[in-house]
Length: 326
Image (cartoon, one colour):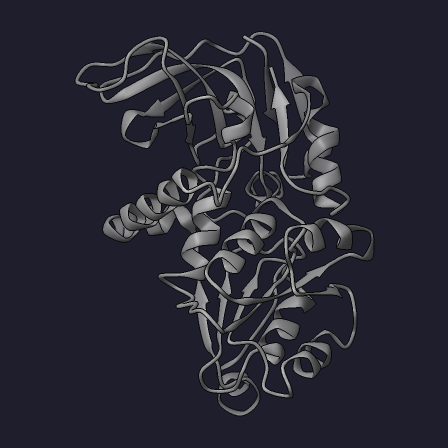
């Protein structure tokens, strides 16, 4: 089958289209899907750079998120049958291909009436945003939330959710992306690359800072997010490192940033706190039923253009969700 193979840890430039990848087969408790759309995520870039803890080693078939039609089921699988359309994620990779094996327990039905590509994000970006806002971030109506990388796939859905929950949203994005997040209902839109981002947030909050900060931009943005959070009661949820690693010391937490610092990896949350993840997904499907969340509108491109799509995402030149079509 056709697939994209990562051949080194030198990033998307060493992502190659191959035509002789072996066709996988489902084992016990697994399903095989014919991939109709694969989601592009920053995890893919982290893996391609060797920065993802416990990630696959080259050469490997890339991609962690895909939607498609079940073509076969393994032993012991119930409730899923060939012909059903599902969305799922596999941190082990293999989504940038014509076929992918998923654990049956991780295969979520594509909502009725949605095209497969419209469901991309349903098991990665959307639950990440919701977990960061509610069970981990403790967002309540009337509070202020700063959302870094607000024009990205996770950032956009976080803006929509936060407004639904009655928060005042300060969205940080590159200037060329401001209209996108403003259209989602953000109350304030600021330049994510500003050297005075924290000062701007404090100005907008009467000097207090944000009750909650969602941080995925990485690099210097982490320090800006910490400085923008309200002292003592402010929470900073870190769920990405698109701009690279950032250091923070115990001295910083005691003398400079007296905040609640929370790390989020949705895969770890699924494994370590399955009840919390179940609650998040239940809430998520409630938002879908209520029309708060609507079908996604990813930017699509052919599978062969995957290296270029990942390079653009790494350069933060994209807006919203990207999808590859095998």
